[in-house]
Structure formats: C-alpha cells, structure tokens
Length: 194
Image (cartoon, rainbow, N blue to C red; front, side, top):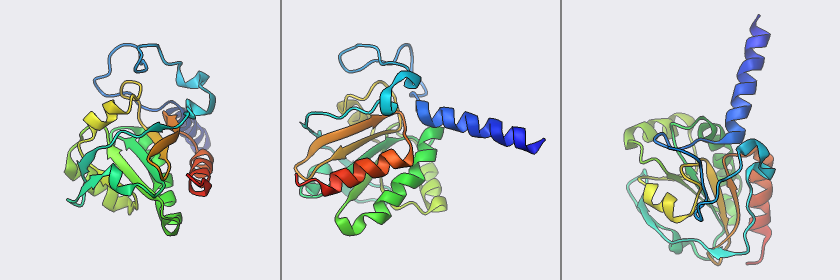
C-alpha cells in the first residue's frame, strides 16, 4: 500500500517541479513583458529555457538575510547565478538544494550565487528555512520590485538567470528545472571567457 502512495507523491512533486509557481495573488493568463501569453510549462522546451543574445542584467541593491547590502554590479568580473524564488513555492523548495550545491561546488571558481525572494515573504520564515537546510546561496529579501524589472512572466518562480563576468544575461530558465540543466548552464557560464 505504501508504494502506490510514494509513486503518487513522486508524480505530484515532478509536476510541480516542472511547472513552477505563480504568484499567490496571480490572476488570469501568465504573460511575458510584451503581453504575449506564455505557453503552459508542459509545452515549453527545457522548462521554458530562454538563451538570450546577451542583454544587460538590471542592477539592483537589496538587503541580504544576514543584514548586509548586496548590489549586483559589485560582482562584475565574476560569474553570477541569480535565482528568484519563494518559500511558499514547492518547486522553489525542490530546486533550492541544487542551487546551494552550485554555490558550494563552484565557490573556488569565483561563482556568486544569489537567491532573491520574489514574494517579499517574512524574514523570520526564510531565516528558519535557510538555517534548517544549511543552504549556501546568499538570500536577498524583499525582491518583488527587482523581480518585475527582470521581465519574468507574472509571478513565475523559480526563475534562474546566468549572468556572465561582464554583467550580461546569457541564459534563463523559467519555472524550475532539473539539476543537470542547472549544472550544465553553470559550467558553461564558468567556462565562458566573457
């Protein structure tokens, strides 16, 4: 009897991981910045991966969970993985350990991993969650406004951007992905000369 329950749980978690979450107050159809509808996650190639022809990553300054200030432009010269997440999003919680692994694994390569809370959730909840799971990525608070500046389809988390040493976005995955895609994109970013 336990095996069918575990199978059902695994199927549900896989579906959530592939589709991502919408903002809790999300209304209507998810659209891109140009108001074109976004295809359902199940029909998106590579979980709506959008390699871009290098565009500048919008700069921002946010307060980190540890109380320090973080400005994206201060990391010019280093490769950056920028994840937008929400504690209230199951796919985000599923992706978080893999993002943490990237931070730990590639620290000596100069990789900077920033996790921006896109839903402005309470600091206390985030603090407890990060500490319980011993995550290594730097968590930034109150990132809803920054989230909007990145032209992410309304409320879709997790979303990950790979930003090269020159501050240019070179790849994006919207709506969650699997660990091998995260590792591949990160390795490509670290190995790139720009």
